[in-house]
Image 1: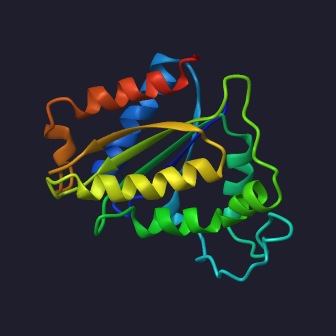
Image 2 (image 1 turned 60 degrees about the horizontal axis):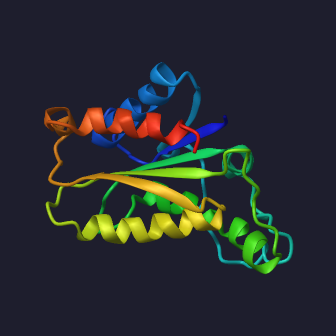
Length: 192
């Protein structure tokens, strides 16, 4: 099974990063699969230019670190997106990557060539951590993530979200977050 994860937090060893690491432990240590993690903050990803270059081919005309992400998404059976919630949305790092997936949207909806999944189908997992206690940020970020997952032909995804978690490392004091993340990782790679 080919599993990839996008860490979209700018804060190394922050709450999002810690939650993702525990999810990956569930995948690797408990289920025996390996995961390729993309640290979006350290990658060279220019914003989408809305140039229309991918409309006819489904391929972005700009070349940077997204080239590696495009290949990984094409080959993936399971995709994890982990992001902090900033201003009721996904982080800028997540949004830059997602916007550049416009080429997949064009390929799927304009060219009628959706990505194909492996034998177990394509599934996703969204991990969200936010400081605000209300779930408005979870709902808004979740809508953006849903559009991303559907554009890359992930028909279903689970969401694991924690609010009221702000200062670095606060997720470690949550009574169940790490256990829930590890279980979410195990569940993601279990076949139907």
